[in-house]
Length: 488
Image 1 (cartoon, helix red, strand yellow):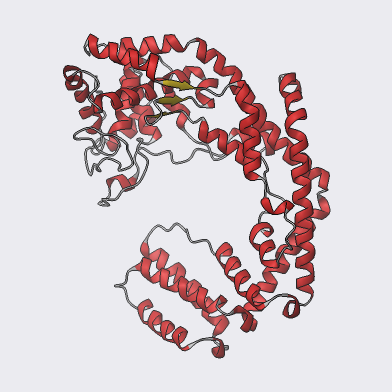
Image 2 (tube, rainbow, N blue to C red):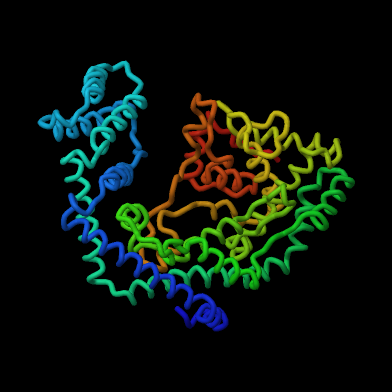
């Protein structure tokens, strides 16, 4: 509701952002209309209008778009059965078209048919071989295969008709207005966060002081003084400021801007299929602005820059945000300890906390993440993040706000709800452990954080908040794999 938005924000958007968006969307629509005309002409007589090399390129692109590589199965048998059924249906298309199969194709089919009957096969390799074969048979030398050309023609016709139908009920103005609405939401969210950051910044020195008092209560005065000097002099705290919004937003738009829009080069049919057909009418000109904003302002500690970057959520919901800030300060503290910048006596005491964090997982603890710029002796994969959580619990032990509750991710986020009225339909990955973390896989590459539900339970335990019965049941079930005892 525009009535709830700062008038200056509306003025800035209408003056500096809207004209660029409208021009870009109109250019995009002109480009797409030109492409649709090219496609329409090609579909009239594909044998005449589609060049031989374009048949092959278009076939490859369509096959890869229409056959996603990632499917989830509950077992190898389920995966094998799915692809065997798919393979058999596929071969039926070609059983009466033997002249389109090469000798290599026939030999591979014979080999795979033998493997299908065996229980002792590597399922992943088998499925990969099936996919390679199906892709080869279906699209190789497409210009010379009537069945391939027929398939490509049908797919292009389907997409053309789909887009034309949508265009019939959606005017150019509707498309532009939708894009402006999406951009306006992102822009106002960014501007609003700059206002909230003012409140956080006003309390910043208090947050630093609280961290020093609580996190360093068991460490030497020397260590505390060194860290105090570090966070006041060397460490930068980066906020999104009001003057940053327009440059970041416009830079994002420029990154999204499709370079072919202003090109004088003639458009080929393959270009239309590759760059436009499957993204027409869903192109968000401000998506890159939103992504740039998210990338720049997700709350995190960057040791290479000696900076803590404060994200929009942490600034807006600062009761949670001050604890996220403490979590990042805990990473900075870990960094200084790892680089021998704080006293040895303090490090001995600090190591006890890390050891307790390491012992949270009782079995199959993985080695530290290779992407970490620093780690400590005896660390495991999740030690660093679990220790940062523990330090935060110490700093805010008397604060009943469970900051880790904010980490649950919903399937329909607030942005989607506001724009499209989509309903909330649950949370993602509400679990206590990642099953892969307890597997025998040595090259585990999951999250370095504990699962959100486990973090919430551990925060409540350390803050001496009584667990509801449902959470206590979770504790009882997983006590053989997780150590739920508090570390202090």
